[in-house]
Amino acid sequence: MNNIFAKSGKVSAFFVCALLLVVSVSAQISLRTALDTDKDGKADFSVQRPTDNVWYISKSGGGFTFQPFGSTSTDFQTPGDFDGDGKGDIAVWRETTGIWYYILSSTNTASGVQFGAPGDEPVARDYDGDGKTDVAVVRYSGAVLTWFALRSSNGSLLAAQFGASSDYIAPGDYDGDGKFDLAVQRSGANSSTDQATFFILQSSNNTVLA
Image 1 (tube, one colour):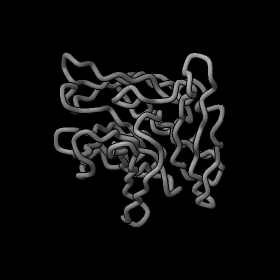
Image 2 (cartoon, one colour):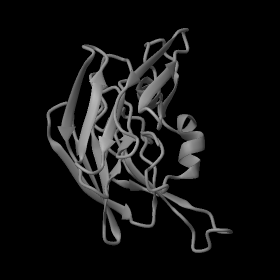
Image 3 (cartoon, one colour):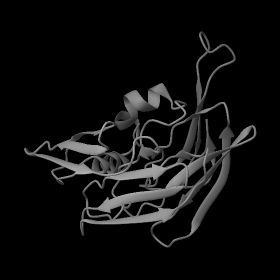
Image 4 (cartoon, helix red, strand yellow):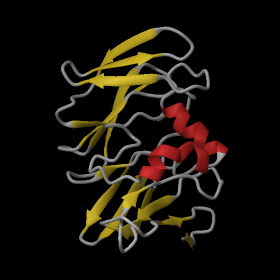
């Protein structure tokens, strides 16, 4: 599991396979930075091994590092640039407590914040465009999806109902304003033959694009 794939498995296949092709340059940088631990502009290969809860990172610029952090039995891997220094930070979200834990690369110190509840979907992205990853979750509220994000720019809460519980989550900066938009992919009436539809709540003008 990681911050691109949803823990429920309900993430758009198109979103996973072609994300860097459809989002803006600023959003591409945001996503790449989440996995770029040495700030060379390239994402680094990284895994967390379940047997010992150790993160292993092969840096694209050369070198190898490892860091014990989190628990694969309770946590979901959610790396991002939480301190805005241009380097990806190791991070996890613990579903049992709703607490996010991360190691800030700028200070090499561990920090954490409580946000979310059991059953939520972690969707940490940069929703306010300040260059820092915001902790965020999607909550399955009956037939609808409710999005919650804690803006790192001012500590305010973003909360919005958007999408149906049967949709696939696919946030991205689709309008190119440097902020991630809430977005879902909805299957056609016949999922094997009908085309799916993307619904995007554009952060630039708060209108829905389908």
